[in-house]
Image 1: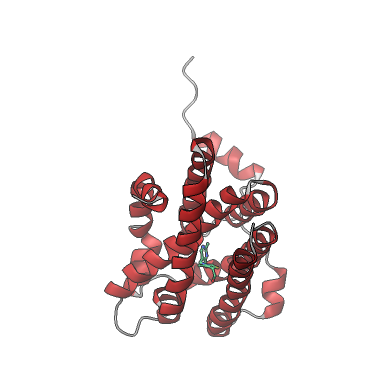
Image 2: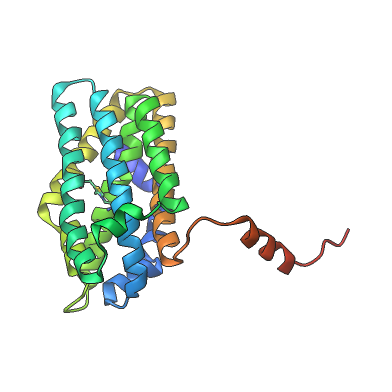
Length: 236
Ligand SMILES: Cc1ncc(C[n+]2csc(CCO)c2C)c(N)n1
């Protein structure tokens, strides 16, 4: 078993839940609500920029030139994906660059990006790579899974093609290979830290879709009070 086989086994339940999320099943049938996808794609544009910054921070700390180049290329790739995919959908949904610039990240987006930036800037290098891996790996698996059952004339075909395409597969394979090499060199404690960072990032992937599907933003104090007032009164 490779280290990434262990990571896959350890997160099996969470990753299966991600594949079954209504966002992804609706995406496969092409029935995903337009306003839900619009909200998602705007948040994803904000996410991709943060992700590219986190990859660049990790790149600067890589132990050898080949790995610096791998991570820096992936950062450039993330921005390129953002431009292409987002321009495609933003044009369709009438979201202008000005509107995008005025958008604030959702709590889920901000939380995920903060976690990646913090881990990439301050954590050990192997932990940063483990935290960055689910972004690649989960999207590849979800992309292929949706492509295999996608409805004809799916309005989300551009999204599905991006994440089930060969170019993307190669970058995921390189990231898995890097994680396996780092996992093989790490001692028991370092592997535990890598596993925890990986699992946390998988959770953030789940949360990003869940939050997009619910069209969540930041909870306001008055929302919390309204929720509390509906709760049954304490008995003791
Ligand atoms: C929340 C969220 N997670 C993962 C991806 C997928 N992704 C974004 S950048 C990148 C690496 C290089 O392209 C990959 C795989 C996404 N779009 N949104």
